Length: 379
Image (tube, rainbow, N blue to C red; front, top):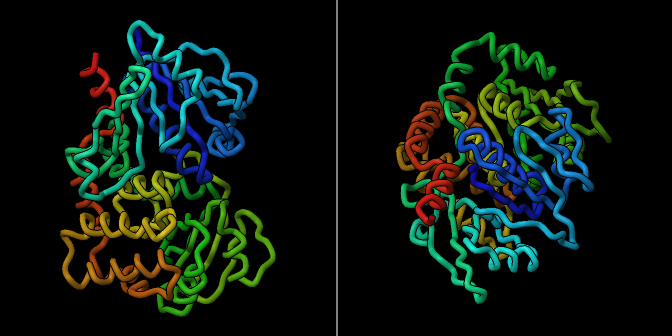
């Protein structure tokens, strides 16, 4: 009998949390034959991820998408039989009635709390630790990460081989870009821009527009549309139209499906990403990137930023590491860009480093496989 899984997702930051949960759910069904329900409390946001696939979700009835039963998580919880494996993602709180049903099962559910991704040293020591509950249930903490003692990273089977094949075929790249309406000047560097609101954005664009290199920047619809328009001196934008200022051409495109967003990352020379899901996908793309980490109170996010920079830049020269760290710090502190043009000019071999880093983390744990194996070891 197929193992039954429930994944609970409370949407906090637009597409980050639900993007990770959706990718994980699809992977567990496709590669591990799990019977899976995904519970999401904000289907309006989730609909943006599914719209590109021509699917609209409903609050009233479950929707089967790629083998995943997508369900609305209502404030008044219905009577639902709990699954064999229950994932409580990113600190969301399970419905009390559901927890009571878990405790009433003859064979208790395997309850896993999937935490946020971090490169901090302490993560490995906490991965898999139990948290005894008053009702007799045992909850376990599960941490994605970049080291063998963590849960690892989400990665579909054959992903890296497909990406390398795509990048080695100019026609594949051209056909994809043509399909989404992007036709950059062959002499321009192609960049993707997907970030949170950032006071450094205008300063960053100024630097690019005043340099010697031409850039074509693709901006999927999202939170920074107004900021980019303000920099262009416009009130609004039209999808597909190319706007120019100095050496920079900017083109807004529709929000992409996860598969197409991967192809965009693979197609670009440099990617600006944010949060967790696009951050990981940029690393699988084997291209240089700039990470806008989700801001937290008391600048706690900068500790996580530095932890990743430490492991990611370990193989770089002192000059390249200094440029990378300075640029990432400036970007995440909303300060004037430092080392920006150096990173994008190609004079530092960041593309080679990005590919080397991808090979390194490709050898780490696969998060979906780690979760499945943890459950199998518990029964």
